[in-house]
Structure formats: structure tokens, C-alpha cells
Length: 151
Image (cartoon, rainbow, N blue to C red; front, side, top):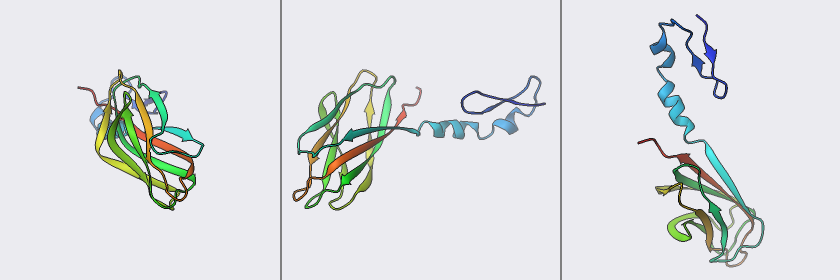
């Protein structure tokens, strides 16, 4: 019997009377579970940053999410000291620091303790520290998050 695929993810749907359900769906749970890690959002700060400056405030997710990592890219790398960014939840710093090492143009920080953001909370970003010789410029932060698992 021929399977028909779903519209978005091309997951095969067994035809009526198909007795091979177990064989066809053995790895489905792991495959679908992996999709939960695919969400990203980029925030551009295309200016010279200052320590203590909030450069993004106002992402309210449609559903509860878990922020797992942030990568930072600089068009002009910071020098003298690292550039660091903290996560804000409802305007309050979370002490989950993402770092762009002095002299580096890109670095990804995976949080030891992911940040849980509820659909009623607001997510923001703040520069904690900038380069002392050159603060850096043209910063792009990419946030890696997933939809929180169902209870």
C-alpha cells in the first residue's frame, strides 16, 4: 500500500489497512523530537555597543520556550576585553552570559542552565561588557531556543 506524505514535514501517513505501522514509525518520536531544537531568532545591534545598554527588549513567545544558547557575531571584533551579553526576562538580568572573546568575530555560548521563558514573559538582551580598546561594532545575536515540552 502506498503512503501519502504530510504537507509540511513530508512524514509518511500509512494508507488504510497498512499493517507495517511499527516498521514505518519506529524512529518517528526521535525525528519529531529533534524538530524542537530548530528554532532561531536573530537580533541586530548595528551600532557601537555600550556596557549596560539594553539593545533588545520585547520578544514575547507564543508558547513557553527554553533558551539554550546564544551566538554572537561582530562585523568589527571587540579588542582589549571580551564583549558579553546577558539575557533579560521581564527586564531583569538572568546572569546567563554569552561571550564574544576579544579579537573574535564569532562565538557561540551554550548555557549550562537554559533559560525558561513563559508565554507571559518578555525576553530581552543587554550588553554587560564591551571591548576596552575597541568595543566592537555591528553585533548580531542569534538565539537558539526550543518549544517547551508538553506536560
